[in-house]
Image (cartoon, rainbow, N blue to C red; front, side, top):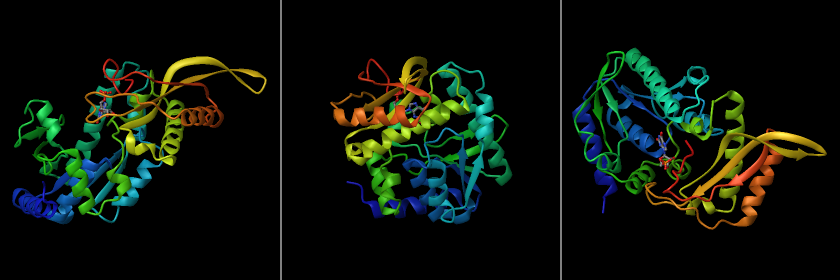
Length: 308
Ligand code: XMP
């Protein structure tokens, strides 16, 4: 079993030796891996680490504020508001793979701009064991990263040998909050991949509200502990509904809840019917653009967890 204190002490010593006095950056997403890395590296090299939080506008309701609250003051932390840039880049794009590529590219552009301002030499990444084991060791332990604008950064991966549960244990030892540590996995491209078709400000608002309702209701009855992920997807379909005595034409939202050990496979468990009905009623009454809510019952495989 991993000795947490030994790991933390050795890791801090190792990072000090590796980085020395050089400027270093990390992309802090607020997920457990990048959060643990940020605190570890800060404890080793202090303010020579700048943690950059890129707000792409695809985060869950309240998430950006939460991340700022947790880390501002605790780290040399920089919030970068890139919401407009991402939304503009995705204008007219409907293909899911193209969306992911564009989001990835804009992210790197924004990040490189910030890294240049700092003149960083090192980049900390929150790679964990399954990331490189699954890619059959293709990610080498010592490597450089060349960014498109010409910057070359030396990569440091403090939690490379750890598994997710161990990262969570280290997070607790570093006094990160339970809420942050137990957060459900959330894709890097965020809500943008939970919108089928073009990403617009209106659709982001709809999916974010629907998603918040799903989270709130699941967490209220403590079911979050049994689920790997629980969220809402906004489809591109508009269907007929009735509001008051008027016919209404609104979006179809899908609720997805799965159990899983490692996201390689996933299952839709039997779910409390009251919960599903409550979520459905809340979404259709509180999110006016939604006319219909359905429940996904497909396991992975053959479906993936995300819809796009
Ligand atoms: P799929 O949809 O492939 O997802 O069954 C498996 C797990 O990976 C998450 N996921 C992502 N995470 N960037 C990420 O960081 C992504 O682009 C991405 N796509 C999917 C997904 O939420 C699930 O937990």
